[in-house]
Image 1 (cartoon, rainbow over the protein chains, first blue to last red):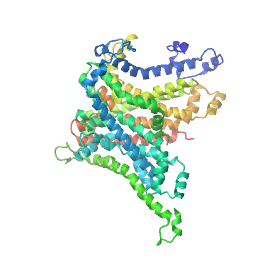
Image 2 (image 1 turned 45 degrees about the vertical axis):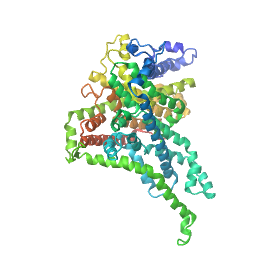
Image 3 (image 1 turned 30 degrees about the horizontal axis):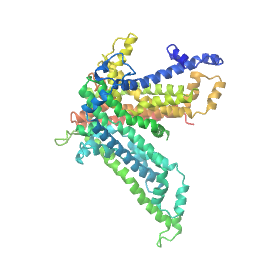
Image 4 (image 1 turned 30 degrees about the vertical axis):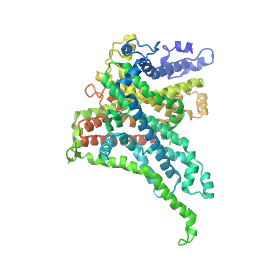
Length: 302
Length: 309
């Protein structure tokens, strides 16, 4: 590893091409080929550029507010300082923001899991007239950007008397075309034999769903739930429009407001808030990365 | 289900027919939450947008029919024009960078390397996707600060004088692109990684035997095989880049001047700051048409260039 990183500077550009010199030197196993060194160098630079900003954020959040402007930045705070974390709780009502975000995200995720499972099952395994046409209509809604519907949704919410409530964020986000599509794919992937066996035992359509297929669909529901969590925990545009008073703000909105209020006054306080807001996403990343990857790329593989 | 015709219709319903009757009801109940929700929060708003685009309405006074005036004023309003132009330039630059970086990294990961390293790199490149664009823009704004930002400090080490990242029109546009690409290349990367790992090893071996190596092998063997993934990745990247909002809103708020103002920012501002709901709907419709047109065009082009197995 060390000899490769030493060559980082010189071979950066040979990363993309493994041309003829590679073939020549490849026979000599002792010396890594120029292409290999270049490739490792490019990957190392890309990894550093990806992780660097996050590590800078973490290390700066662990410095005292007054130290946080110091340059050069120290990436390893020898004495981590948690003043910024205490301060951010004083500056904004972090607990309330977390509670709001958790409520909104959690209820959207549960609502999407339930409604998408039911609709996906209907499209995959129940027989009714217009099934294809209705499914195409549902899929078509994926093409409509949220920015186009936001003005009428805002008015609708006002008309329903839900302005500036958490329900204004939750209700419109529950019907999910993508989740329905995923669950339909999932149910289509399950074998038909179970339904036939259950029908022979006298189970009706409801029993076949509730005791045979629904329990088998839990992994699919997990994908829908994790995707909903990842998207809505981080969502900024809709909360910015649909909530007005600070007591209904979600985390990203609260943090942007905090940055606006503090300006460049105390960086580490704002960054402490940013790090706190990342923690749930980090948990999902560590424990549900595979599910999340499958979900994110599922739409592309149809 | 076709057995119904065999049984006499007027007597007791055969089980199959009763089942399909129950199934229809069950389907209706199962679909109700999703379909009613979509009717209320998607279809009704689309119709609302279409109607609203022809009215002038500030919510307080009565709406006033203005015909195509909202669309006409779009063509004349310099802010709207600049913001659409900005959005198009942004899409071209950001999507090119995003796909280029993603494809190079994904192909580099195909080479022989320890599996822990591959897992580590894959997780690393994917990580920014789980963060919120607003939070990312918050810390990036500090990093690109002209006086105490870490980016200018790093540049000063190699003798580059401080760049006014967030206050010069060109540099601030570059920052918005960089921050956006930093967070989103991982998505295209995952798509390419999946496509590349599906290519049978024998094809590369055959190409090696024929003397096609390096770039030649990549352009003649690999690229045609992953062209469906390239198409999907570019459609998805273009659609999401056309809707860019969080990054410019937090990083620059559209400034300096209008240099980083995007189409969605103008929708937001005209609706919720200037209370021009009709104009905002008109801009939204134009953006939707743009999104649909790009998608349609791309699929048409793909018939010529994409190779399906």
